[in-house]
Length: 142
Image: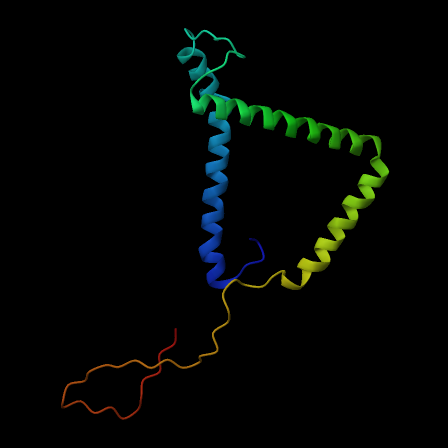
């Protein structure tokens, strides 16, 4: 974003700023107002039997999703524990992947998204009065 220039900078920098401000506002609301509102709105809710079977297909789908997510969480936890127990190997692999990605991305740093226009001259058509005489073509600088 900081390396862009020209038209790409004027198009993408305001968009990036809007996304950042929206994310910050969302984070602020999710940490302040949402929990408070949930506390007041869910005050009278009682938890039903968690393991009771249901005939509703959406409830069964949700329970399968939660079980799959818990399996994913367990495997992710095991991967994190492995990385903590083998710190040196993890750090070497991490920095090697960072350097490898830099080697791939460096040729494209600082390039614009839009190609440079090779057209140096543009033509404009204008209507002149019949009496007018154009002795020299006008030069427009854009």
